[in-house]
Image (cartoon, rainbow, N blue to C red):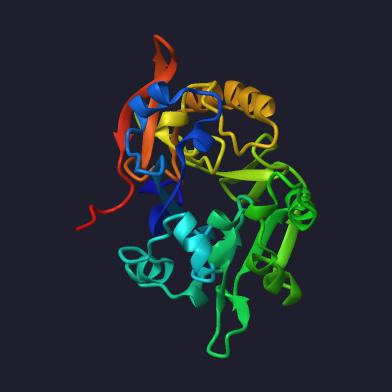
Length: 293
């Protein structure tokens, strides 16, 4: 999809699964399963881990990198990690790219399903940056939290997913909202984890009827089923903050004609929203990648 001076694509990095109850918090299963009925025998829901590729202005920008390939077998089984169909490297190759071509890498946050693919094992078994020529960007608050997590979220942070990047001087710490590059905006959210940053690619020259931008929603709205305000994850450290952030941001996205792009929805890339009987609802689905065989 062309948005202003940028071309944006989604890259599938893997499939995995998380507990449906944890993904929808206090919402009963008989309600959330109406919007996301893809549940296995262990009550896990099918999940995507999509990276966002942004090309233009002489840059090749990647946002998040999925789970990667370093996870121990026990954790792979717990999360039903599946790389048989999708990998980050293959996804880049479909666009004629290698990891070395990435100029800038943005961590929305440092949880393993977002940051895992930013490092990899080399031939000697050492953990090294996947994108050796890229500047890597993370919010300062998120880095501090990831280095000193709570007992609640400790399992989500694996230092090998970012410390090798920092050790090589490739990691840049950011402080709050701002425009990282022309028409590429970062918006921080703190309900899921302190210092999570969503990425907004604006189309400042959009005409009536065209999307004026795209929001890579990270874990504020991980799937289309999380569009209702109260559908907040049990994984969120501060669920009431997440609720307030959704109540503020989703109406703004509608007013600004921004598409909402879902990192974890295994069945829907992005949507256009509109007010409905029960808050904001999906007006139309938007496909951002070629159909997979």
